[in-house]
Amino acid sequence: MTAAAHFFRKLIPDLTPWRASREFRLLWTSGCVTAFGSFLTYIAVPIQIKQLTGSTLAVGLAGAFELVPLVVFGLWGGALADALDRRRLVLLSEAGLTLMAALLLANSVLPHPMLWPIYLVGALTAALDGIQRPALDSMFPRVVAHDQLPAAFTLVSLYRNAASVAGPALAGVVVAVAGARSAYALDVLTFLVSLALIARMRPIPPAESADRPSLRSLGQGLAYAWSRKDLLGTYAIDTVAMLFAFPVAVFPFLADSLDAEWALGLLYAATAVGALLVSATGGWLSRVHRHGRMLLFAALGWGGSMALAGLAGNVWLVLLCLALAGAADQISGVARSTIWNQSIPDELRGRLAGVELLSYSVGPQLGQVRAGGMAALVGTRASIWTGGVMCVLGVLALTASIPKLLAWDSRTDPHVLAVRAQHEKQQAEAAAAEV
Image (cartoon, rainbow, N blue to C red; front, side, top):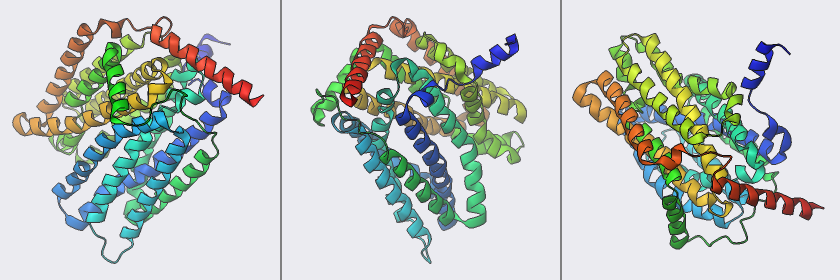
């Protein structure tokens, strides 16, 4: 094998989790199908609201209706994920999400579609997503070998990033040609396929020592997170990065300031393209062990790239900077997921997944408010580059105050070693039960 061939082979994502685990294959395929279908609805909803009202405020209110249910049910969903069969919980919530897509379809075929059902379905969908995501995220450590988790999350991010690039483009074509009702109908079909795949998975029962879902059990999860300063560091860095350097809300105004209204779609897609490139060449990510440092450099890369995007005056340079930011965010995501899933005990995995859901969902919401408000004060491009600078400064301050995060090493961390032993014991017991 030539040196070049050996180099490129190292870049190819590690397919070991796909080959080794039937359950991972089913879960991965289900997520892939659902991701593309969900993007159809994600794009179709604001377009339909715009067609019904012609109001930017009405479009923006859709996100406001979704935020509170996501926060409340994300935490409660984490408690449920630790107390119930995770596969059953994902299956039931997926059935509920299928019903929500069907209700949007039913409303869209009315002679005069109504606005309030769209808001109501959006809130219910956010609640169901909050219930499902902790259970879904906490399933991966149960179906993949402990040392294969970084490779597994790289493969998961591959389809998510591909969906975030191709999904909006496909949705735009479907809605423009066949209307929102066709997008909703396709989303229902993808949910049905996903349900069939999840139904084929084996049960994933809770740990024997699992607590009943309650405020007390939620408090235990939060107390564990507070006791782990390295975990707090990952949550804080992600929140700071999104709060200060997530300027998606001002992209339409950025396109205007660059005299490149034609590039608005490219601005939205650029970060996803960068993330997809990292996912497609991310074989090296599974060989990293110092994930705290990896997270630090990636977060600095995200903030620095966004600062350069705000300073650049050429649209192509802006797109390049946004793609670099997306690549950095993808590396950051793999680092965070690895730290979370390799070091959190299985009996707490659901509740901590609920905390993680808040850290990576609330930050972008607040970041858009910051970007829009600062743009009104200092201008669009200044809002972007100053946010990037604040992100860099905030990340440096956080990492300086949390030395445990910088020292984190998957080969020596005591929490990782304990979880690895727990995982190996569970696999041995499962193998003995099958015999």
